[in-house]
Length: 278
Image 1: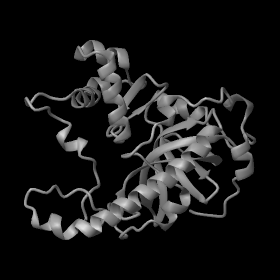
Image 2 (image 1 turned 180 degrees about the horizontal axis):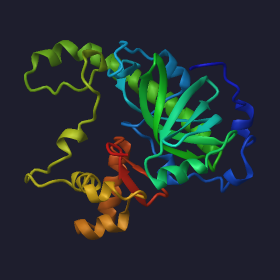
Image 3 (image 1 turned 180 degrees about the vertical axis):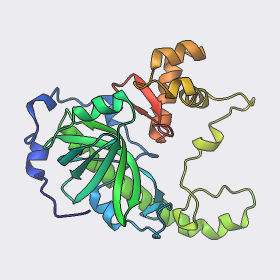
Image 4 (image 1 turned 135 degrees about the horizontal axis):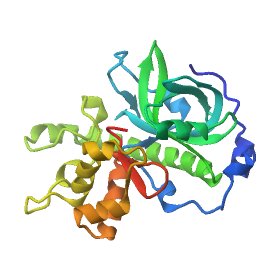
């Protein structure tokens, strides 16, 4: 599944190698430039070297942290279309990995029609083991329209690696103390078998009055059957109108949920779907 890379790093960072239709302005949008946590930025090399117990249902471990949802940027090769799915190889300059995008809806088909061999894309998806090989089951494949996004992705990968290493070192020194506390939340260490999560996933669901937070209201709305059934996702305006919450609060909630990897944008930066049902 992994092979030598044919990715041209020189062209990637100088703007070469893009199809003419991919290049737009040189200023990355805020939505595309945000750092993600639940959706972890990684390279193919990190995936190939990640620890995995061998059980197809178990998560991968990178830098001592359990990883499930990831985001990569690279060039598409060997795109193959079938009735139910589209397969392709992603080359990011550190290696190659096979990717699969299921096409259950019209939106899925249209998204993959835009993707062609030789095109740079951002792929969001779940890491899986299939027939002994590591692959990425994508729930979003988006053409890269600004070559700065490639450089920014690798910066994100480096930053995430350094942050994870620092957290892991801190966790090792405080492990004995946290073990003695009956009120501690078993979250922070990937090596202890618990899924890594931020405190906002627990404390952020309700405020001090026991009322659901805006984040949770947005997530609940996106996970309703009627919302899941909309192939383009839900527009921010609809969230604000239906939940009767100011747009500023909706935008803030979307940013937090997107950083946790719980939701993702679809056709643009205004439509969103729940990652759980994507």
